[in-house]
Length: 163
Image (cartoon, rainbow, N blue to C red):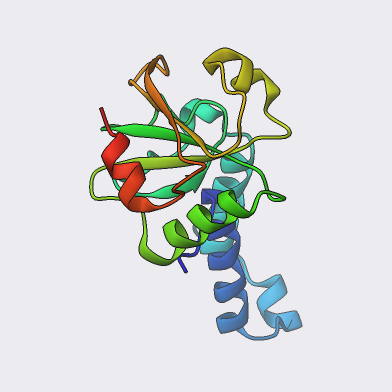
């Protein structure tokens, strides 16, 4: 299983590591003058900047990834892309989801997992009426083609549906 961390989480993890390595602060170190900003201070500033980041500032997703959909991510991602409309209560969706988590997305294809129940705006935009639908989109998020993988929710059927 691949770990997914946002930029802010990575910065915060780095800050925790620095704090753990620095040891306890004594009165002598607390009162010591500083000639330059400390690493933890610059990490705090970077963390604040990352917390205020907009979707346009997100790091791009690598080709061949399987990630949760977030607004703006399509435009940030190069190469072939597909939206997988997934419902947690759907056994066929879970089957394809488990295969994508275990094996990863097909080479070069980025698959965005879209929550079927909460993203009605995307369902309407792409004309999705059934979970397990996969919509292939261009760099601007415009639909190229779609396919319902309900009867065969597998990576093989996903690959066969690629336009």
